[in-house]
Image 1 (cartoon, one colour):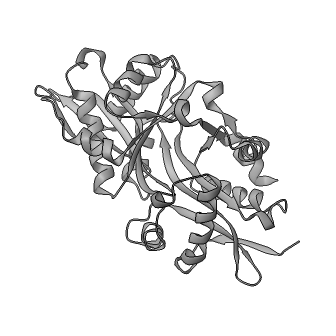
Image 2 (cartoon, rainbow, N blue to C red; image 1 turned 90 degrees about the vertical axis):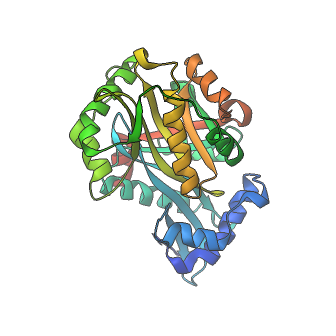
Amino acid sequence: MTEVTIRKARRCDCKLLMQLIQESAEYQKLPHHSIITAKELEEDGFGSFPAFRAFVAETKDDFLVGYALFYYTYSTWEGRSICVDDLYVTPSHRCQGIGSRLWKKMIQAALDVKCTRCNLFLLKSDTPGIAFFEKEGAMNLSIAEGWETFTMDKDAMEAFLKVSKNTDGVNIREAKRKDCSGIRKLIQDLADYEKMPEGPQIDAKTLQEDSFGEMTFYKAFVAEEADTLVGYVLFFYTYSLDGRGVYMEDLYISPTHRSRGIGSALWRKVVQAGIDAGGCRCSLSVLNWNTPSIEFYKLKGATNLTQEKGYQFYRMIESVMKKYAKE
């Protein structure tokens, strides 16, 4: 068995890391032209605006044989989270526990900054990957709760930005610290609508700390009329083998203010933020019974990846994360 060290990725790893990414992309049957370049990987991971974190598995002779790539996310129910975009070990070094060690390193990194969830998206056809992550304690929320994943590619994003509608005196602006109490109320309204009223566990103070504190886990825009918040959108930046993106965690408009273009205006702000950051996708997840939202997103150019490509939404919860980290 080869002696392997698990450590944080460094800028100087990018050339070897890129080779592993290309291997992983081939395994996932991703189009070659859509994969990031080594230069983009270096800038996106170690430049002025890092989009991801990574751990690598290194042999004694300085050869990389595996990696785990992840980024910080946010849940309006439980707060800080991470999303694992890719975990890959070269075929010659599998069945040696390297994948589990990389996974455990990520889990510990998440717990160190008080994350309470670890999310990932797997293709239904990826039987080995599903078996691995289910063995490690991840639960399939696409089956358990009915979550379906949608995405807009860059062409759809740019087309969406070209269409605008007057919001009739409603001000769409970036959220401020003082808005967190109003956002928390709207979060509860959304949870009630989703038939999960006990879901939200965070308070306004936590929302303030996690967006305006030392680390920024999310961004938000609000819709305001007569000094009252009537809608919000919460999002965070993402990363994948094709580069940067954004993920829209929540989009909610008070029932009395719907059908006025406010939802589209808020979503458009997220899409613009993604484009401004050099992003190539805008993703989101919707409960499969929520037909009005599904039709709205499809109308604006979003594609259902769960139905069309078999994307499955997995999650490891905090109690399982803590137990796994101690093993």
